[in-house]
Length: 398
Image (cartoon, rainbow, N blue to C red; front, top):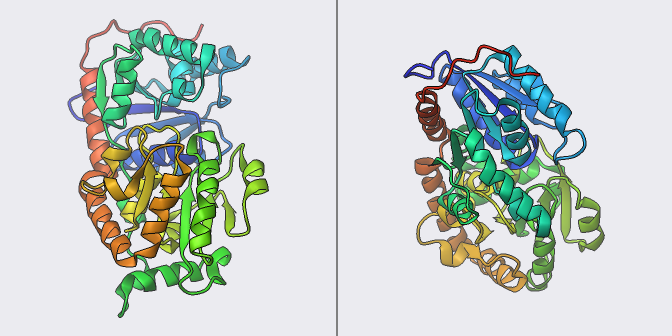
């Protein structure tokens, strides 16, 4: 790989193919293509990532892989090896635990390898499974030129787990052009209210709500990690104080049926949506009550849209918020009363919400533009590719 990334080939190996990881990879791929990188993406064809990556100009290759390790792992590793021999990338960038497992087993350091955990797998499990996951990550650094973390907190979590890696911290970025001012921003009067009204009019689920009914939006896969069950417990005291308030859950996932079964009528389920931008603009407040993260992308997107956010104090959350907003926008994880208090306070104070939303937007514009992320990743690529290694003469596939 030369000093410039123009003309090089990067192979992104990705599983999962939905949620925040898919959005981060899609935006990164688009920025890399625009910078002159030849980008290949290997991922399962179900889910939005394959289509979205192709739309951004990437070569998309089908990698038939399940989300979690299982009896098909050996076949998945062999698929990766065949793809590497076919694509001949200058570098492999594996995203999340499953791709990191299969990708590093397939090439075993014979191609420059970057691993990006997007939150550590051992945080999602307990007992023996967590110990095995930590052991694997400590072992696999021998086949990893660089571990890229999306927050300093995520890196520190890895270090505490005994992972002795070569680290880089590259914050997640968002495609600023997709978020921000909506149709109402150019009007007279209250521009934020006009923006919200215009956005809701275009969303059938919200179009019939009273004009100023408070709307809270939560974007994320419906699963234990994202903590929607905690939000539902916190929602009850909120709606007692603000009876017209509505909570909208965007996304799908394994907990969808259970959440629907316990949700009151004031909670609306939008399902998985192709474009989250109008939902952020329709919101008064965006909440993500995660149990663990690396650095969640949904709050960054919400702030880019000018919306105040409430997030739980997990890895990456403090780093993602504008300085000084932590006391209002950050709550302890798995604490429904604290979450309810923060949400209620912000819903009752429109001026404060708007001020925080404006501050958050400026913070994202200056710090979390995906073009900055792509430049930082390009620096990582150049550094790992500059390390001498024996020329690969034999195919990786066995």
